[in-house]
Length: 94
Length: 256
Length: 205
Image (cartoon, rainbow over all chains, first blue to last red; front, top):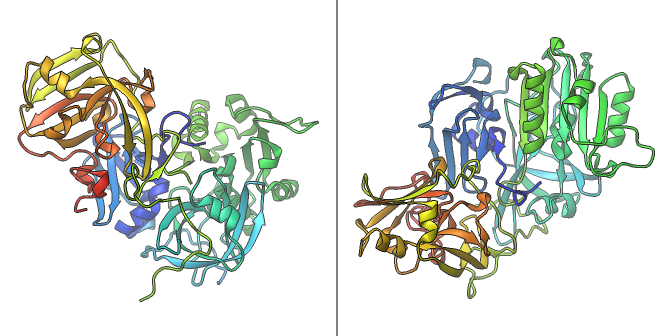
């Protein structure tokens, strides 16, 4: 299945696991993120991610709010979490 | 590499790029190869996790993609399975050019969400589309190696019988009273085929899956449309959303 | 210090030296890859409108019907995506920004910078100058067909002399500003201008 068959299909937070490990010591794909738009809670690994080769745009499955934005540039890594109210990493993952 | 009990919690450590050497290439299907790798100081992994692979050309050009680990944590060797995507940049190299002795960089294991160990109780329902079977196979291999006894079912959608990865091994796993494997072939079926011959739908999931009351742990992996449809259907059937875990496969806007 | 191990036989994509129409670091594609920051919106021409804003004040707005009644322009241009693919001789039809400003009764843009706004919250910034003199349009047709939603239909901004992320899909508004306001990707490290011929992919390039 390619992205030429009609719309850029999202992946999910699992695909960003490696990049997130460059920022966070524990693996955050199992962490729970609370959407600031609607309060929905989801595991980071389950969140739909758009943006493909440009960067990672995590969007809430309920209200489409961008909860996390992540890019990797020659200058470094950018993380924007203004759409996330809270991130919870359970003790066993720390 | 030492063989250890897969820990429940992965220790937090910085991911480093490591050098992987190809030890063996296994042709799984006309389009998919497994690569058995030697990775010095590989820290171990849990079934469902993946690695990032980075290739460097002679001119310094680099390309990076992610691949699920196919081997069980108990296995003495690390293995990945790569399906070649037409016009991809990395997969034609890994599942076409790479041969024993070749090297590339690898980091991992990655992923704390889409993981399963036999320590997690309850029946196991695995739903795979195409190469999405890879992390689920690691789970079944782990279950077999660890002597897991809870019931496990794999529903595996492929285009044709020639596209079924791990076909023979899946038949052996099924035969031992271990995991039950149900195939559906969506594009073409061999003569005499009396299995499913259509896309995964509610009727199929109800027929193959466990009852809601059994509270199975569910893992779905494959192309985004299949994963989202199956997850939605399983929630509609009544399975608790927190028991359903998903991993979407697809091109990262380059093409794999 | 040694570099990363080289993988024997790995060549990666064909990346030709910059020649003629292919900017540095780009490769030619025959298809039209789709890349989005969010789900494809459902087109709704009855609800669609396009707005020009001076700061917070609307200075022009058109319904779909009114928009299609404006003078249309057709162009054939090359397009270049920052993810390294380039596509040549693409054919578009739409309304140039010059035409929109004229229709709004303006002889020049009300501010030196623009922030383009799209359905779904995407934004991108440009100097107003780069939208003038036929350099940019609001495109509604691609290859003589209505623009597909996956490629930005009902209408997208088209600014082909810059990397394609500046050609905002599903565009609904051009907001003129007196300062350069970084957009969706520019806030996360992408270049504020984005000239493919100077390989301005990231801020600082």
